[in-house]
Image (cartoon, rainbow, N blue to C red; front, side):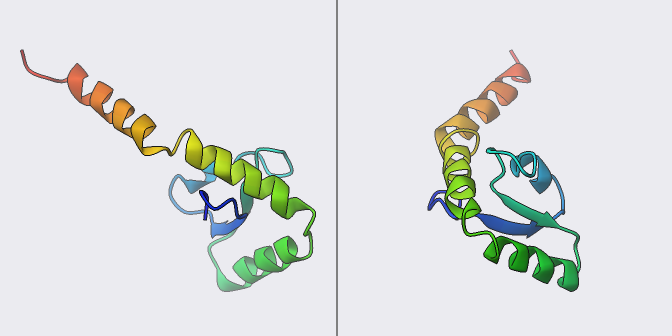
Length: 88
C-alpha cells in the first residue's frame, strides 16, 4: 500500500508508529489506532470520512516507500551496520 500511494490504517504495535509520521501533518501516511477491534473500526471510519486527506496521506506513504523503506536504502544501512562488526 505504501508504494501504491494509499493511506493506511494500522494498530500501534511494534515500531510501526515511527513510520506513520506526526498525525495531522503532511507527513502522516494514515491513521493509527489502539490495538482493539472497536478502535480499529473507528480509525477506518475516520479515514473514510475525510476523503480530502487521502491524496495527502497517499503521497506521504509513497515518499516513505521511495526513501526510508526503499530496498537499496535498507541494504546500505544493513551493510554499513554489518561492516562495523566485521572481524579483521
